[in-house]
Amino acid sequence: MKKDSKVVVITGASSGIGLATATFLAKKGYKVYGISRREFFTPDFIHISQDVTDVEKMSQIFSDIQSREGHIDALVNNAGMGISGAVEYLKQEEVEKIFAVNTKAVIMLCSVIVKYLRRTKGKIINISSVAAPISIPFQSCYSATKASIEAFSLALSNELRSQKIKVCCVRPGDTKTGFTQNRLKTDVENEIYGDKITKSVKKMEKDEQNGKSPITVAKVVYKVLKRKNPPPNVTVGFGYKFLCLLAKLLPSRLVNFIVGKLY
Image (cartoon, rainbow, N blue to C red; front, side, top):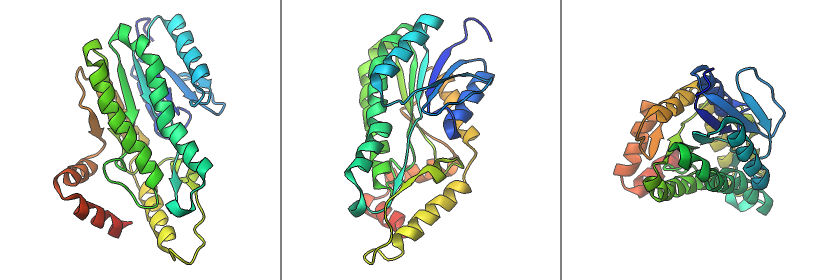
């Protein structure tokens, strides 16, 4: 690895999209610092065990990386979680948890890393989802967190434009990772919804497990890092790009009706 390798920090780097992205970028010559809660070792990049919702400790990690490397060139906010089930059965602590990980942590990590990226005219890449522009029933909180990140990223992009810091959201579609097994599920045993929740979640899980490899997302992140002026949103895969385009062009009532029939 060259001494002048660009330094990239990736959250949620011990599995799935985060691991694939960290490994791929390391092989492309980037100096990668991967961060996730669980203990993890790989010869491909430097891993640090830390909960991304602990902003004070994350701020110290950024400071340590800056001191060690002399620069930070990009942050990839990938850490996330999912909750499936009807809104009616959500518990407050579950809602607080998913917004803490998927939204609040992203916002706060962006806020503390800006001073380092300003020096390198670096990039922030927030991993969103096709579930942001196309809201999925029985996955309402997940869709809400990802939609809020896209709104936040657009605003942040304008804030940082004069400082030459680029902000981009990458939208994966169905991707085969451990995210499916790790999704938190609310109670589905009830007489009101019948088997609607079960059928919807099973279809979602089947699509995910038949989805693209996480390396496809890693390659898109790499392309975004290489681009001088990346677009605000990049969707992974032609099929999902087409779906997101239709969601923009068709009436929202029609789009929501179709999604409701699918799920």
